Length: 200
Length: 296
Image (cartoon, rainbow over all chains, first blue to last red; front, top):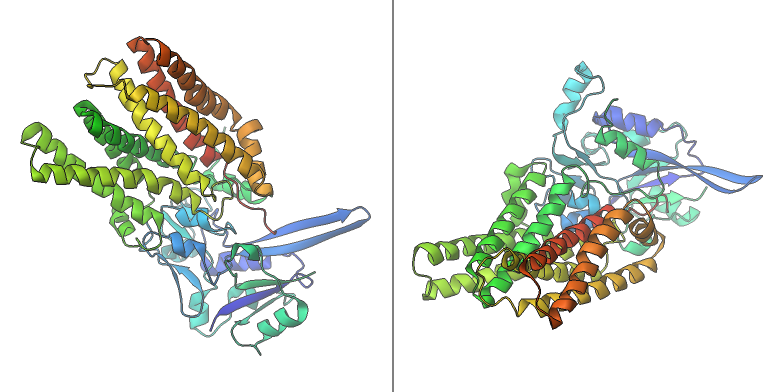
């Protein structure tokens, strides 16, 4: 089994709802963006096109971040999800240099959204985050363990995201990749990302 | 005026098509650069001091490497967990480096204790010296591979980087001994170092040229990084530090020393400038590192 995601760029309207729900679900501190949406413009007036491209950890099948991690803090679940054990991370940030998708974030010090004040939400959520270690998207593993989809998938208003098993040929993700020409970012690097994009 | 927080800079970077890496070059990242420079020069000085029979060279080499190790520790987000870094020797160059550096520091320290406090011309002394040389070699070699195995930064992701780092660590070691000789320290025979240093300075100059030329043709991101080095915000430390101090002065005065006697003060200046040049090139290569554009 290998969990993966397909993002339909034709359906994505760039509302950044996925980025917001990611922040809410994971209570990530300021400056930590496990998911972000990049607006890409192409063409020349009047033939112009603007596409919104959501970016997050690609959960590569051959993750370079895992290879370089000196402590084993970065590990891969049997279902293919690349995760970080914060208790083992020493904060060397080697994984940040190895990730070709720049999807890892280092929390140098504890930060709050309101100076000198921590909201009850932050008090509860920040217990999951340590200062001095690296963090990133984990496909909402706690939600998956409860039988739920990742928050970004469940909350996408245009249903641009599909989550499923890439190893299962008849899964919805496999069919979409096959039928709609799903592509990965930088496949030439040999990382085999688990996030596929459908062309706009 | 309110200070810009690092995370605000990071968010601003995410809007850029070519995002600079800052973690290994700014703030506490400067400690990492300093640590790589100090451990490289220290291990290099040890390697030259052993055949030259230079006790001050051995002491300063060990001291520099130990200082570099402290820099490495202070750079970590969680230094108290540093011992965990030795657990992934099979795949991580940082793990390999920690083991090599530890081997060097531990064996070098015991050897120095034997040298100054007890008898070092024993079998134990010979074994410790051999292990320390192995550790020093290991320390010099692993550094470049740490940078070169970083797939995220195309400027570093080339086999030329380890070659460059090995060359710079060796010339750093030679520069330390030349600086000591220039300051009047009794080193023994320092003369053999002068042609070696000149040769190392010329070969690193050639290596830097080859590196820049190869990276110019290694894709848009690497080309952007090279442009940052040559014409962008990293150009000043590159031309003044790496090129003038690190290459032109050592090659110029080194060539002069080949034919005539050089005053000890000038010798010390060459050593010092050469070391500044070594530090500059590590800083410049780190600072010019850019991530690939996303989306592709």
